[in-house]
Length: 418
Image 1 (cartoon, rainbow, N blue to C red):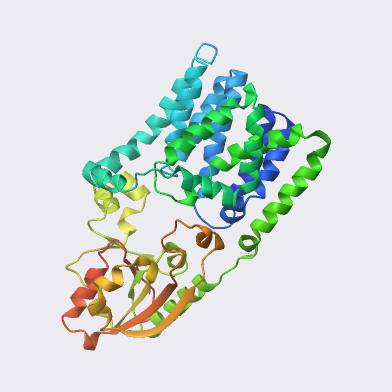
Image 2: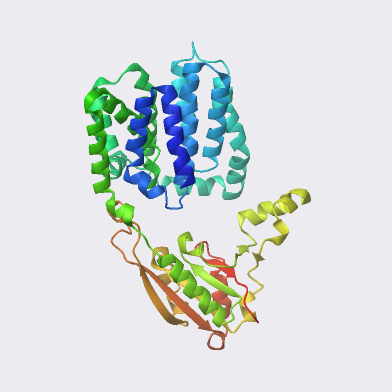
């Protein structure tokens, strides 16, 4: 929520420098009333943080084109580096800057390339090195090849459903686009084209909304005396289309985590297993364990002692396959969500050894059900709670411990009385 409010300010502040106050206000209103904003401003997802960095980087770059000041390009580079460390769609900023800067290379500040492209790329290089070193090129290629496709119409659908006012008004304005609008139009087209080759995922389209909001804002300002009525119509339409998102509330993640914690405490289970999304893990008290072959652990062991102390490496809870920590307790609690399939079908025999205590159904935010490209939209999200009695497990206890070393499973240590 804090980042979303700061993004609204950045849209107004930078928009006023690029255009004028009326356009900045109109764009901020159109953006703030979109369902995209209504959802991400209180969802706890990284998109709100990313958009603050993304828009600030782009805005300062465009301001720098007009002012010619090196400090504007420096701010653009700083925010670009932050965006690169926040979301994997950020590198498209470097392409946008290269294209727009290349078109104005004769009358642009000579340090623009160094400050807006080279500086953030150099700042991102350490992470890129670690990513390639520990994930390995073959795995990276294998992961990303499966995401490639022609999905531009899918992302157009997302904009039409979750930001209809911004899209429609921007389309109406496209017939009268001016020279001052080319930066936004070029940035939008580059990001939209690149994004369309990725698998459809509505969250990735969020940075396109402020760009459309400014073009839509230009259309509103051009309406003259009809401007207040047009903005009121935008707010009304956005309020109707995004009403369910506005009023959506769910305490189910808190309830699931509370019941899981209560059971672990009652069973005096110091270690539990969680095969659930982060929105429930967040509420589970205790510490997350990392397997010894986890990339973070392998990297941490290679760091100098001083750096290890700085990141608290010695206090990390690191587990090994041959040291079964479940043997120190009589029962083990496992919480499982159907969104993590095919985990259950792959380990059905082992799960049948546990006692199924409770099932919850979780109704997600409305945007996920309006995403027609979401393969999970028509499936119930069930959360199931199991408890395993070690007296009934015998050698299967080692198989239970082995689950904690699967990518989709987390080992959680809780503080319970012994």
